[in-house]
Amino acid sequence: MGLKELEKKARKLFKEGRVKLDFESGKRVYFSVYSREIHSVIFDKEKNEFKCDCKYFSVKQKECSHIKACKLLLKNLEKKEQ
Image 1: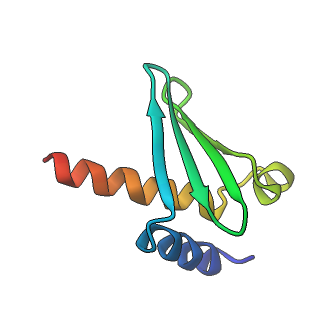
Image 2: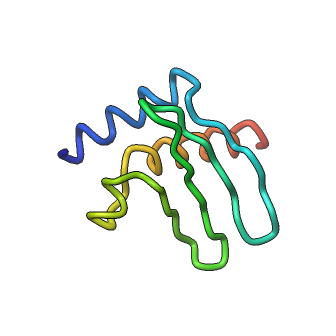
Image 3: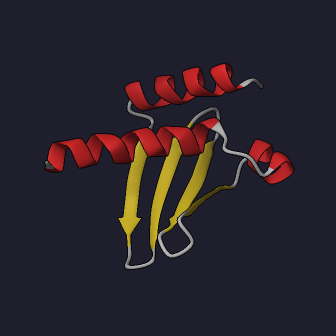
């Protein structure tokens, strides 16, 4: 999957409300992304990195659409707080 396809899929997941921030602790932020399956995305605040349980991320170790969708949600939440 190319970068443009990943971005497009991420925007679609975000716009359709398929990304949920489940829980935030001092060290991590936990998300659920409702795609064909439910994927768990974790943002590690100390390491400043995202991880996803999807096949794409585990095989390629690159940002998947689920992580990109979570980033869009975080940006959106930051804008609302300002």
